[in-house]
Image (cartoon, rainbow, N blue to C red):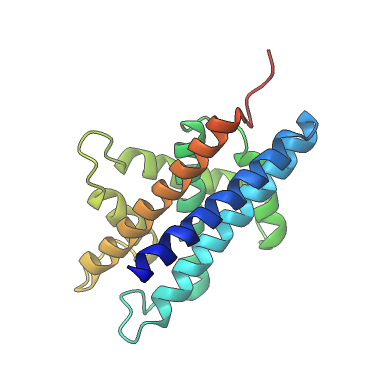
Length: 195
């Protein structure tokens, strides 16, 4: 029972933090609100992708062995961006350009911003194609992400990789669903132009 109470307090505290951040963002002028909301969501996505990579690669027999942590992180982060946009903004991408800009500044690459943006958009199209809105089973989605990381050659650990990617995606949809409910209850609609 004590464990259940601890979990409830932890979730409640996290939701209170999201609510407080929501109220802070809601009080800002529109341009500043858009900029700070993008930064907030970017940091949230980076944190969650980083935790996933850290936890998965720390395992003794990690199914993600054989690829660099950086490659794993960048693919998981792009998936996190896509799921955030899908859940919070119905795939309309109002804040993704600002988030991409933060991403490009944080992780230097030799490609131009246009080339990097197109590479991310290509991933997003694959994710959208594989996301199963009818049955809710995301094995094909998880496989597409795993193949983007490891290639298309079948491996004995492929199913295990898919399982952990789908598990992470499910956690993300729950997280972003809670944030969306908090925003809705507060009347906060970032990325929506005033009429």
